[in-house]
Image (cartoon, rainbow, N blue to C red; front, side, top):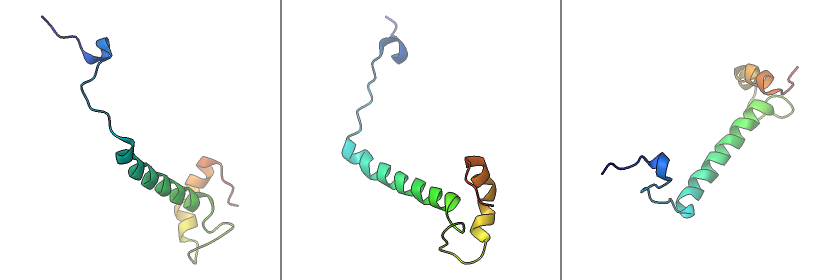
Amino acid sequence: MATQPIYATGRSDAPAIPFADIAPWAIFGGLIALILLYFVSTEQGAFALFKGMYVHEFVHDGRHLLGFPCH
């Protein structure tokens, strides 16, 4: 007897991952995303943590691609 592929039966033998195992990684990923969003959208525009225009020039094209005005 041939076994059916998983996509045909809707069954999976993979165990479910508990929420408590996923939550720290989800929070970490969210914080990293917020930090990247800050640098692309705000750093050396309306507010600056670093002196000079290095961060602005590094993310300049990303700002325009995402629709953030910078000049």
